[in-house]
Image (tube, rainbow, N blue to C red):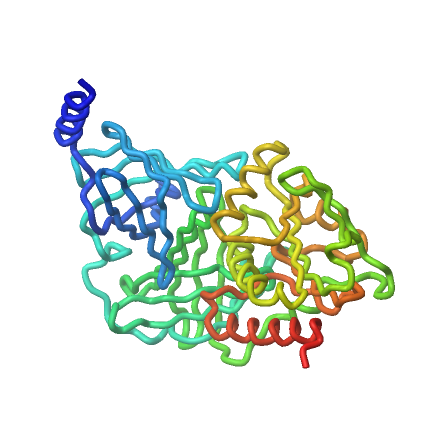
Length: 408
């Protein structure tokens, strides 16, 4: 009887339309009134009706393996961040639904559609190989406003793919992997990673100047301008956050997800250099840094290095915070302690660590010697999308770690 039920269910499934395997183009409808859409590509694969997705952003590949397909509903949860898609399959080549970002308390749903067979990220018939946007740009977001901020834009034309890739470096982190195209001489770039939903549009005004719009999610928009400047640099990230009294002994204590109280004074950390990572599971730059620190820990823990992460989550629900952290730890293969502070936001982080002048970014990372004196504090993180800046950061950081471990 069970065998016949199995055969009947299999026949029923084959009668229902299945999503086509291959490349799709998704669109997040950020502003339906102004027809502003954020496109990204993804691939659907199946193995015996078990579906996986791969999301593409430039050189980044995001495997989405929590996918459910029932009747005409195709739902998938992002692998690291607390967000998910709820969609309906129309025929076998269209999806319609919403993206829900659970880490936000308002404006956390965006309409979503997707079509099979569109390999180009942006809907463009043909673009010319234009190098006028290539290079390094001194960028100002919200120019002329009191919350104006500086950044470095870096863009590259990938000829064999006929696309533009790039990112923005800021004093609080980078904008990760951006990919796009030239449409009517305007540069269009987008990125979607489960937390970031970024869309940039830019055009020239003058030979070496560009201006544009930046959209983030459904509620954020700001203008930006940039001028070509190959020597422009941001402020030194090791000068922005500092210890108020360098001779003061620092300490803290928080609980891990197993409700064990962990302190810097614990025996485990005595006479060992310690990296303190101030982060959140909702933060894409923290994800990139955590992946790097997980590698560092596996390489140098046997030589005495310890790492402690302090998580400032975007929820007051302790159980929800635990679930988010446990998911984050599992996905990134983190073996060091990640402590749940029960707090959120840069202001609360600053209050909970009174020995520091301020926390202005997630992540912020402290490097302590064997006596737990602070030797360096790094604000933000230059992730792998920043290329040479990322390689420079890794070289400098690993040299510092070897000095803290007193390698000969």
